[in-house]
Amino acid sequence: MNNELTEKDIKDMEAEIEHRKVVVRKELLEHVKEARAQGDLSENFEYYAAKKAKNQNESRIRFLERMIKTARVVEDKSGEDEVGINKTVTLKMEDDGSVESYKIVTTMRKNSLKGLISIESPLGKQLLGHRVGDRVTIKVNNDISYDVTIIKIENTGLDSEDEISGF
Image (cartoon, rainbow, N blue to C red; front, side):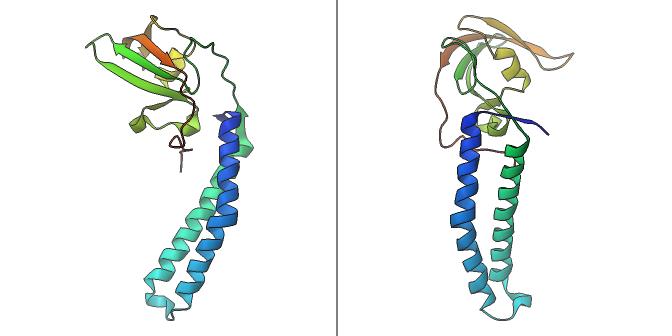
């Protein structure tokens, strides 16, 4: 399982791991102790909720550590005027004239509901390296494709909202 990540992705993941180990883990362990002290564990909802939160934190730590361990580091080699990683591209859909914007991100930051499109997605793969004014045919599969025209490229970088997904 090789995930394509940038150096920034890896640093962000390492920071999250550190925060979860040093701050969140300590808080959650305290919640478990407090809930356990309330007595009968067989009907203690707070205890089970605290244990669940603690286990979810530990799972997230393991997930992030595994992602870093198996990552393949990618670099954005696109020019300033080309579609590349962490750039927002505005497209005109040729079939209906609508305009849509997407940020091209690494696989671990993808979130199509927020307009974050992976460099591994059909759209992301086929847009990389193109410039404003280029007409690109996006081939979804052997039967489905559509044409877009790139009307704007912005170097927007990463936002704090562009969190690592996948868990």
